[in-house]
Image (cartoon, rainbow, N blue to C red; front, side, top):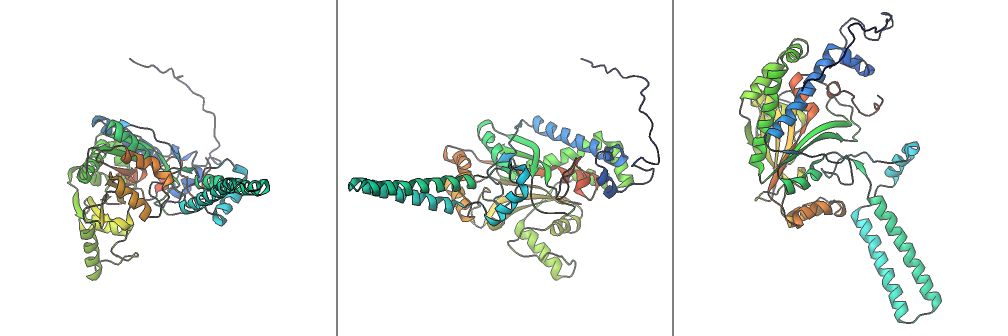
Length: 432
């Protein structure tokens, strides 16, 4: 089947006064172009980024479809926070009262599960009081007063339960996509996610895209194998299908980006435990090889500077996978290892950006995951559906998340994440 497009041989695009055209014939900085989002796609840099982004999206779907994964669309509005401690955007219909709503959340934070349970206990006690008065054949006035107190208690409970069920823009589709992995085997989701941290760094956006596969009947080693194969597939795809745009990036942005792609595509990812990685960093500091802004400590998450030192310096510009992290610094759903001190989590670190992928084997044991939720003082109620996936039968499974914009940064060498997404959203910038 062929599709013919009828295009006029001569198109009148009108005239533009060169003195008023916003894009002068000079080298334009990415910072300048961020103020012209509606026009910046006309520049060589941003159009090349757009084609590379398109190629990586195509490669993503090709890789997972070729390996038997099913593409699932997960919701972006949810009541559960995947990481358990993320700053999430609240979804509200009170557009004209946004500031008041935000201040109310500061002054009156959402109730905890303990608050809800306390209100339920009051309802129970007042219900029992009514029953005792009726059994004792108390006066009509006494019973009426007691029923009124019960009604008030029920209204308070309903209010607290409603405030505890806030809707948020999702920070991940992982929890939801697990429901399909438990039913249909390996699946993946690829879509927008959100974070509400008030961050103005070159590494963070309020809206960004994540690729999140979930692999059924697989453990942490299968997870690492899949992540490595996926990254190599994307690198090879760009080398084969985007040579012109990658040449442009080599000449104008980062002279080593194509070489970096080839190196990752051809190199086996070295795997080191979290403990080994910390020991390497501690030794480097002790020997005066490096000074970090963030102190190296056990049971701390690695900072970007630590990640980049490991992959760019210690392991000579090679990708690595760090695994088996302390349970205290990882999410509740990650499988507890036999030592009961670490979880089966892994991060893929690459030159230029540091962490590219974060993943884990999921905790499939009902008692263990419930205890982890309680240990982290998270409310049980929003995760009851997630517990059902264990309560009513599950399989060993794992998965990971790749920050799509970080992959584009890694491929192109572009430093600021705001320049690898068509319409960047960050604090103070949400127009167009």
